[in-house]
Image 1 (spheres, rainbow, N blue to C red):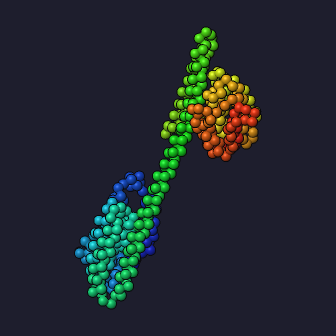
Image 2 (image 1 turned 90 degrees about the vertical axis):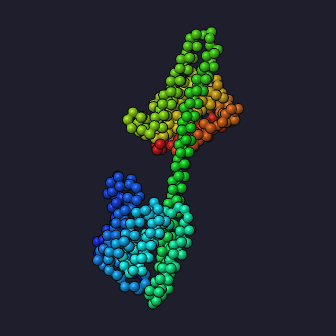
Length: 406
């Protein structure tokens, strides 16, 4: 006969069911960060204490009469309860000690509540044992054979099916622990994969921002510096060109500082929480900077920007910035037209350059900037195209939905 553990009071049973949730909600910070052996100690103490509650019984194998607790029972109860302290740190040791205590408990007929520690130890071993799992399972199964033989001799009337049923229930506890372990491993691998994907996406975003900021300013500075080489005969034009190089360098430093603020863990608090989208008039400043670099640019802006555009303003700015950078690099001196139209729910950008206007098909050009723009626009649910115009030249078009979150 196999008897499951019974607790005399309903209140105690409800307390046991609610205990883990109460610990998670009300446990102080030091307890949540304490060593697992310290956090498992109350479980062993609980089984040890409940064993002295009247009418509380544990697992009973066979028909041996229940024996009252005596002084010797204290050692048996301790051998079953207190090894649970290391059930996660040393699951194999815990299982060995609890199994020995369980065997003595059943053979002497105590049938104490502490005998419920055996399925807990099996579940813990299945969940936390990392090495030699198969060996531990075989040893436990082999050790059960002499215990079953002893029960058969002490109680010849007990059918063997009862002993087999108890063994299968213990196998179920081990299997449940193994399932919990596999679930935990799969969850850990999933979190690692998500973290790696997040890091990759963040590196891509940082590389894209650096490309947009550094490439444009450095390209403008290189073009202006190259032009200054031929202006030595005109001091006034040379001075304006060098001033433009200096101003471009300062803007590059300011943009890089803003980008570093975004990478700062404290970003979003204090002075670092500045607007991420370009301020009003930044497009005109960008166009003027490109003109100073020697690129003839026609700029047209239609409509009134919406009060809340989300990331649309920033993406529109990056589209114009990348298109003008490509114009400087691959079609320097060619006429470039920038047209920005603000609609109620979208921003439409079109940049047309006579000549190549793109590095995608030019020597030394990677096309990485245009690919980054396409990703930016796609994230907001817009449309992006870049290619040769029918009448010649290069055209970059983008339709960016306004109001999309960052």
